[in-house]
Length: 284
Image (cartoon, rainbow, N blue to C red; front, side):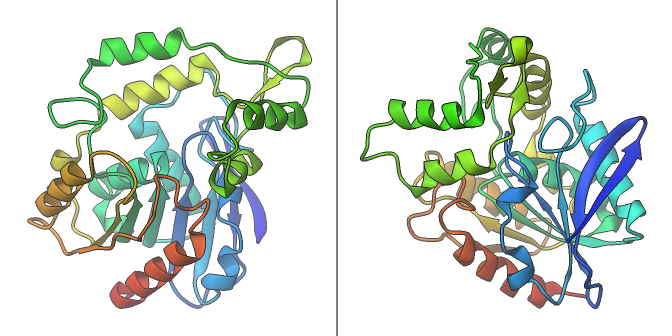
């Protein structure tokens, strides 16, 4: 992979690009709080595609400005990456926040998207009558403003801490993998944290609260692969949202047995297989 940086309005966005350009591009967007490194061994599975791995602003090795965590700016960052690589249209894959943003991008810029894969993302509103949480946006932001940020001297100390607070029967590959790829933030006095700073996280959550997927589906024209997690709450609601999306565009649904929200952590090979089959079926 070639390491690249694009400057968008003074903010540097880090992304990685495969040298192969024989077929269309596939853009992978990571979950909130991690980085593009979560997509490990992606070249082995998509060697015949042009792969783009992008660190979302505020995470990974991209800049962490004071502002710009609204959906319009996130989509503008994606456009800058596509243009820097001279990509007219691409397949998009996202997990969690990455899929939420990819869904909005597909709605706002349908002419730049060939297909969309949502890995337990983009299929249920965060708040609202049938949302994940039955609270208001004001309450969400207040909660995140008051969230305690724990500090540590090193990343190794972070791993020791989080491993100690999980019961041994819960501390599995799933959680262990997450802390290999989590973004690390420098805070005061030379300390570091695995938690996104309040100034950034409240803006991200404000954006998430404002995303309404049933409205976005009406604007999406590309085929969508939905991979809802079997082991998470609200599966019934997610399936209803997927049914809504099928009114407007071609959809495919696959529930991977035993899957959790961040299935890229412990079922990545299965996820890659589903994505590859889907992308091949709708490839230009």
